[in-house]
Length: 284
Image (cartoon, rainbow, N blue to C red; front, side, top):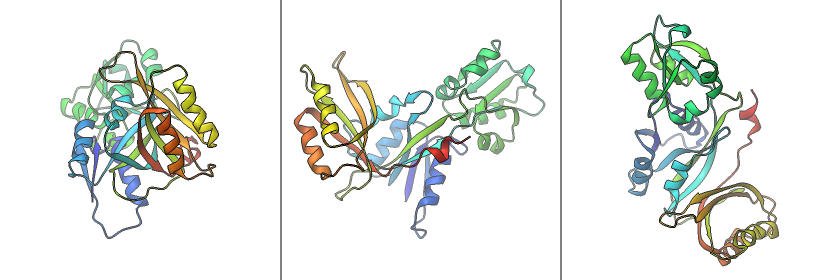
């Protein structure tokens, strides 16, 4: 089984993939993690049947929905079959001999940099530099080998590249956590799970969103997430990523879907999976 992810060894995506592998009950199947440089290639290779599954981040507890990923899933025959949470514990890494007072530049992924604003406000002379991946940033400063340059990356990434920890837990929030989807190309099979992930475009009429949300209320669904995203080539019109818990719903899922279709311009079932308890990840 080939499982794709964006990043390299030591990235948070790779850590999540390894955690997911441990949950698989079929120990006879060989698992091959396949790293990619960008999310679009990960999704495209899944659609081209070059991968069996992909593991991608969809939401962060600090910065919200990861739109550059979820947007890639719109209008695609994909299905999230599991979710996973990865605690984000950023460390400031330097090369051998470097000290915190020496650092002038810090490289990391833009998402990671945005999650460490308290640190940068405390050290205003340190310049943040965008890099494509946290683990790759760690690799880059190892190769660069400058005592005035550091990287923000996971503990494992720094250890893999034999770097020196200059400051631990530089993220703004101690409970910083990223949520991931495990996704397959949609199959002709029955999907089960206590949570539905949807992408919906409402009709262009007054009260359309209200009518949509009323459906969830009627079916006793608990709304977990509602995020608006611009629709391509339709300025100032929006679709909605929606996640709902259906564990209290008594009606069959297909009846809910039929009802949603009646009040939607476009409806995509993006996933059905069992929710994971957040508390085991958010306890510091």
